[in-house]
Image (cartoon, rainbow, N blue to C red; front, side, top):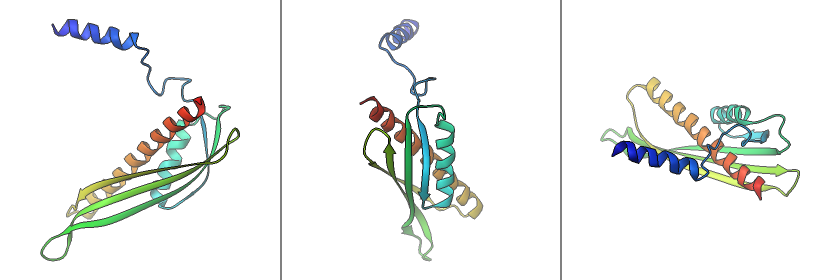
Length: 152
């Protein structure tokens, strides 16, 4: 029964026109990051993600200015007044200019709740990993937006 279900699932997926998002040739964009302001570490992650996902030879060039912001908010404290839970609020605002149309403004916001780790090194590594993940999420969302924008 499982083999039949697997076979039907595979046939359905291939028959419905499904194709991976980052199939060669589909991501035909050049993301030219002109100016970026805000958190230094997050900005570097975003720059690297843009370089990796851009096609320099693409005719679809988007000039992008970005402003990033990170807030670390204390949610709860223990009896001694030390913070035990945090919320990291990330926001990125992209101003996108293309040759074909007027400027577009796109904003993305995410929040992550984290517990305080007693070891500061582990805590900073965890926060750094969250920043890295956020930059990838934002890049993926922006690429999807631009691919849809480019199709219209």
